[in-house]
Every structure is written in C-alpha cells, then in structure tokens.
Amino acid sequence: MSEKSILAYFKDPEEAEGVSRKLQALRVSALSIDRFSRFGGNSLEAGINPVTGNLASMDSMTSASAHTGILSAAHTSGSGMSHGGDGGPTGRNILLTVLVDPGSYEQAVTIIEEAGGMI
Figure 1 (cartoon, helix red, strand yellow):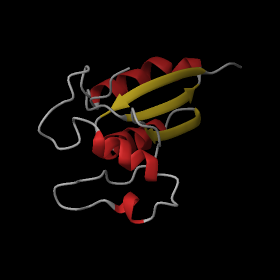
Figure 2 (cartoon, rainbow, N blue to C red; figure 1 turned 90 degrees about the horizontal axis):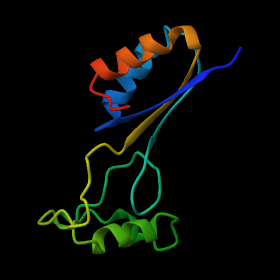
Figure 3 (cartoon, one colour; figure 1 turned 135 degrees about the horizontal axis):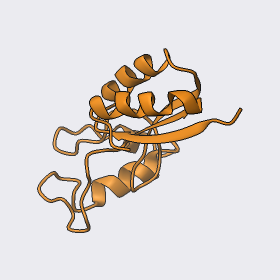
Figure 4 (cartoon, rainbow, N blue to C red; figure 1 turned 180 degrees about the horizontal axis):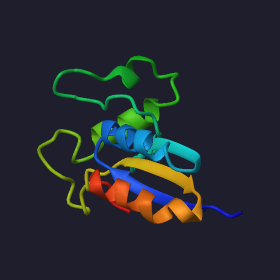
C-alpha cells in the first residue's frame, strides 16, 4: 500500500511536537521534525543573540555550525533592527514531515491545520 506525504510548517518546535503526538494515533509510517534556515544547518538549538552575547557557535570555530553562526550574525536581520529587506522570514522555520496511510490523510491534514500548521 502506498503512503501519502505531508509537509507542514510551524512557528515553534512545541507546536510541531504537539501535532506529532496526535498524529501517532493515525497510521503514520514516518514522522520527523526539523528546523531549517536560509544559512544552512537544521538543529533545534536556540539561535544566536548578539545583543546578549550568546554567540556559542563563535566560541569554537572548529564546530560545524560556526559558519552558520557567522552568516546569521552578519545578516541585516541579525540585530533584530531590520528584517533584511529580502522577503524577510515568515516565522515558520519548523518543518513537520509525515508519511501517512491514504485513508488517514484528510484527518491528518485537519489535525495539522487546526493546530496552526501551514501545509
């Protein structure tokens, strides 16, 4: 039997986690929650805050996320004083990916949309 895929976008990981618990009651064969960024990387760690000095990725230049930290801090939106002028973020940088049985697809979409997810 073939599965149907759903890609849903959320504003924070907690929203996606709540939906994932509800989706487990359906016939879900695969589910993942990832963060994405225009600068690469996909970790769910807290972002850089140059105002408070939270520049953890710059403490160790050997880390794989060092380049991501430098790029995001140097971008015009890094200070919080500008959205960057190039379309700006939508605030939906959490991706919920679901593979579900075709018979449960509509119900899964309804659960996601009711929780504020964007498909």
